[in-house]
Structure formats: structure tokens, C-alpha cells
Length: 339
Image (tube, rainbow, N blue to C red; front, side):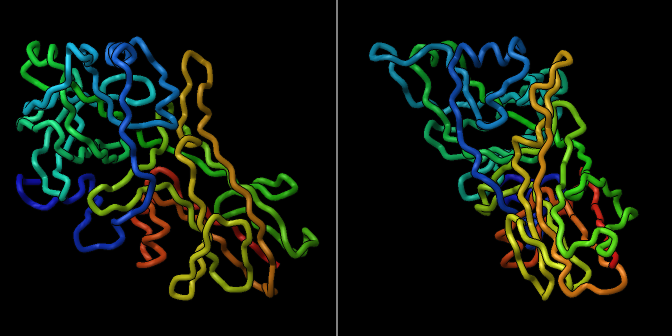
């Protein structure tokens, strides 16, 4: 990415040319953390940060509090940054940090230090400037944050040539497994175990899909593409290879090109797994249930295919027929039905 050119996404999620790259999620808000807690966080004294589960955002670490005798003043300075694991406070090294203007122009691209996770912008930015900060690294969730360059308290201005340090929280992209059970507790294996309508003696049954996060201090984190004003979510979409059966209980139903897609959005907080000192702080387990109706199915085999999507977008799919890239951390699962 070169200075002054329109921004294209890193990590292969390309905004140019393909509508499949535009996805949907919740706008990441900016959070200011009190200086005392911020200092502990940066030093690693605070290991597990429960607030990071539900309240992600950029934070700065002012040295002194502003007051009538120590007012906030505008500055035009470089901004020091540090990339950290939001769940355990450890530094994330060699992360790519892209600074963009409010209109989406790439202003500079940086790499956090290989030892400290720190890096300082090459450019100076005036207080009040609206920026977008994007952070990415292999095996981490790509995130974008809206950021307003802060003022500094007057006494802090004289102690440094930079603005306040900005903490950029990052979330490891977890690995996941999926288990499907029916109302009787029967467990189904991907593309091998079959559900037999005749043997079950019913025309409908309720199934439960359980997704397990299998990697510590990792999972999924919703984010927002500030430039395209689209969201990035973790979705699971189910499709049937026929029109005989139907599903009730999906979070969304979209008919695209004659194919019905039953879609569930996986809540971000439920995917994050944290085990510390042998104690499970956050299990990283989420389940959803739905009912399959046999309908007019009378012979052969029907396949219900569950496809996970990272950076998925229900609204984009509804208008373009493209979800975004398929998940690389949770395999496709097929549930087989016979009469």
C-alpha cells in the first residue's frame, strides 16, 4: 500500500473488484481506559482482561489528568502505538498497522516491533484528526478502529515529543470444531452418519449445533470496515441439495438464485476461549438449535451443508449473493438424511 492511494485490505481480503470481500459486523467503539489500569495492562500485571470480551476498542494512556490548571491543548505530533493480545495483555509482535484518513486514503503502513510490539507513526497528526487504524497479522482477526487524535494535558506536552501511546487490542483467530446432535442426543459425524426418517418415526426433528473454540486466548472478534461502512461477522450458513426439506429456527433466511440459505450469526464473546492457571475463564462454546421438517422428501439422500464464513455479511449476501471468504478455521459440515 503506498501513500496517497486508495486503501485496499490486507491479508487477502481485497475490497477491489469482488463484492464477496465486503462484509458486515458491529462498529468497533473507542474506549478510554483509566491511566492506572492502562499502566498495569501495558506492564503485563493484568493478565486476563474480561472487559475485552464485550468492550473492545483503542485506549490511550495519559500521564497526568487534565484540570483547570492543567488544560488540554492541541498538538501536532507522531503517535506511538503498541499492539497487544486483548485477552492476556501480551504484546503482539510484527503486526501490520495501517493508518488511513477518514476518506480511506492510506497514509502510512507500519510494523510493530519484533520484541516490544511498539511502533511510532512516521507522520505527525494534529489533535482532532479523524483516522482509521487497521491492524492485521497471520492467525489474528483483521480489525479496523475509528480514532480521533487526542489532545494532551499541558503538563504532558513538555515531557515528550510524541502524543500519548495508543493500545491496539488484537484477537487471535481461533480454531473450532462443530458437533451436531438430534433431540434424542444422537451425535452425527460429518458426511458419514445418516439421519433416517423412517427409523426415527417422525416427520420433523430438532437439531443442535455446538461450536467449540479449541485454541486458548483466541476465537473470533466482530469488526467494522470503516471505509466501506460494512461489518465483519462469523456466520454459519446451511443449504440443502433439494427443495423437499425445510428449516425453522434460523437467525436469517435468504433465498438467492433459487437456493435457500439458513443463516446464524455466532456471537463473538461466545467464541473466545480463555483458560488461565487451569481455570476456565471463558469456555468458547456456543450452541444454536433448529428444526428440520421432512416435507415431501421420499427417496434417495438429502444433504444439509453447513458452511462457516469469517468476515461474513448477511446484508451483503442478501444484495449480492456473496458472503465473503469461507472460514479457514472451522470446516464445512454435512448432515445426511435418508428416508
